[in-house]
Length: 396
View 1 (cartoon, rainbow, N blue to C red):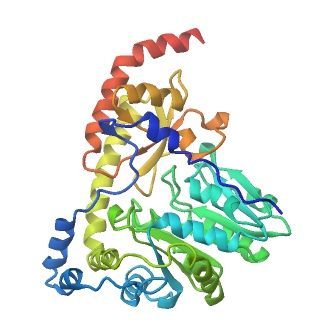
View 2 (cartoon, helix red, strand yellow):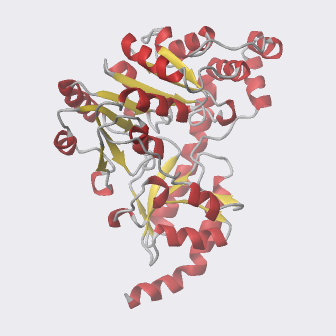
View 3 (tube, helix red, strand yellow):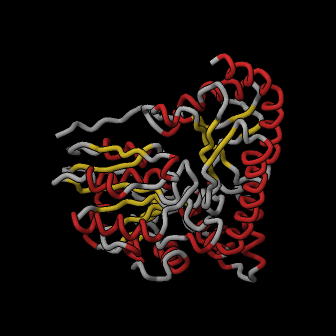
């Protein structure tokens, strides 16, 4: 058996080095909602039931796994009632949901994860007592950040039980094709492997034809992890959930959840229901901001500063992994930017070991209305430094 272990947060260094920056290109969520905005949108539907409920609800414990009214709304709005209500478990955000799934299914077997990635999608199987080891497979820009099925097949052992995906992919901002999803599911089905798919950027696809079916709907041993922070900008609501079709798997999750945060805030649940009541409106508005900002980024990277930056153009979410072509690593670039009041997420935020192929990459977020101000600041930074970068590269 491999002992459970927990590494330091990879973003700990980032929070220290970029503390107090005026301009943020680090945030990965859609434009945050405000409570007055949410209340107005709900009132505009002519429905005041949820607003009245919010002001008059009881402060007793909610049921383990979430109140039935919220779970029904999730089943209807997100899964077209294809997932049974009792197979949806509500958590205080997505982090606790991912951790619970890993603790439930990584114990007693070998797991496969992909790097670089959001830490809980890479590290969480290590946290499970009795895990039989974790294999990390590299996602690379030359493959358009996609999973390579041959590598996945080669990593499977007799005791492989658990696979974690993150689609749409963080930090790349790219979602796999439906054909690749089908192939990955077929490989896992052949070996009886459970898939946890972190789907926090699902519903923010930049065009409808790239949206995948949720893993909970697509695979009988699939689990979908979702949070309200990314697509709807409901960060402060702190509501997330896990969904899957298999009742025995749900019970396993329930048993682990009981020892964590077994119930959430009723006020948060009602806010979550309000978001789902006007989900389409919120998503359209957030996606409009994302696409507008993406156009600015595209011009910045592919035209104005193409000598200094490159990327695989994202097709989902509010994030992109950008290559710096100048004389510094992404960590060094980050230090210089922080000194100028600009925050990015260097490669070290997404892996415990930064391999050479990724040392120049950093993540940017473009989901907020204020993002153009940060991009302008970055442009001025480049203008001020490119002469010295040219000289430094000439000396290499």
